[in-house]
Amino acid sequence: MPHHDLLIIGAGSGNTIIGPEHDHLDIAIAEPAEFGGTCMNRGCIPSKMLVYAADLSLNAQTANKLGVESSFSGVDWEEIQERIFGRIDPIAEAGLNYRESLENVKVYRDKAAFISENTLAVAEEVVSADQIVIAAGAHPVIPQLSGLNETPFHTSDSIMRIDSLPDHIVIVGGGFIAIEMAHIFGSFGSEVTIILRGKELLREADSSIRERITKIYKDRFTVYLSEEIEDVSYEGKFLINLKKGTDIEADELLIATGRDPNTDFLEPEKGGVDCDEAGYVITDEYLRTSASGVWALGDVTNPLQLKHTANAEARIISHNLLNPEDLIKIDRSVIPKAVFGNPQIATVGSTEDDLFNDKVPYLKSIRSYSDTAFGWAMEDEQGFVKLLIDPTTRLLLGAHIIGYQASTLIQQLVTAMSISMTVDELAHNQLYVHPALTEVVEQALLGFEEKE
Image 1: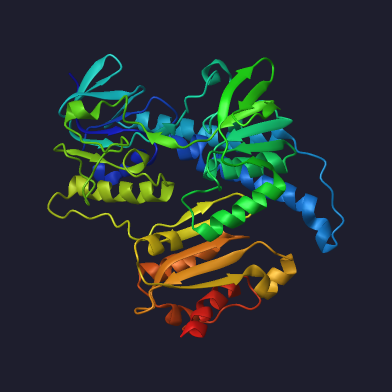
Image 2: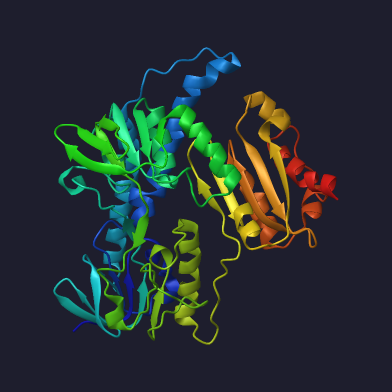
């Protein structure tokens, strides 16, 4: 039976654990799919490369309102795919080849499942290790819809690699994947229909964000709210029958109803690894599981399922594996998130709903992009910054932005929360470039002075 000093299950962020300081270890990696994980191959990277092209396409279609004579004649889908995956696929292959070339690393190209403590089955081999890192990621949730499994539907794992642009795509779900994919395909010329059970898009977002993005997308696409699907069939085209009586025909169907941790095939209970009711591996603040010598990181343990949190967790484990007397804790107190639809959405900290429900005292300040000179330049009527603070300490409790470059504007507020800088210090102890869009953040900060 092969034995290793370290076995890493998953070659996404788990692959980044290994550095020169681990060269003395006998290391194994179990990865049945592409190196680089979801983000590189099926998630963050290809989707954002598509989003950027979609932004350009949408700009060409809407620039006339600014007096720019522009037009949109379509996109070359094959060329876009070649640009994206012609770059990504060689990186994934190179990552695999590099690890396989190392004398101290063994790569198992299959799933791993626990047999007992520190012992797993990988394909037809039984493998043991002194230390194990579970970094197995997550997979799309497939709802129980009548007829769905008999159709060639897509998930986020496959939709970006379809052969041609659909004339009409139906997206089931109202989360970040639905938001981004609707923008991509809609901007490229496809008719987009969104179906969700909830009353608003992005149900976990701040109420002001939910309300605004739902209105924007209802104006742009066909959106069915508070709706459920009766059944689905496929005969050359998809036929989606809704319970309220509407029948929808489409060329492609994207199921975007969330992602669950990849713990089913791992059988973690056999290895003494505890999971919560949703299937996420439970860890302590050092990212240790309930089993001795077993650690976990990324989407398999963190319901936020964010690449930047997984990378941070990988750095923690990379250190802790070699320094049992000097363990580092993970700090998840300030975690930013972004949704790259159009407009972008970025958030950090508590929502107003959270604070209200928990009876936490707060003040809020909201400023629209249209209150700034750059907002005038863009003729922006959608974007805003919403800040929530503790009225006593004047520290930020939450920040929520929707609009152009929201994912960039949020970073200054993330920094302020991370170092406990008050909104007054953030507003007054630096100069804001005029007439840059950052002035909308400045104005939102200054808005709290009006509430004193």
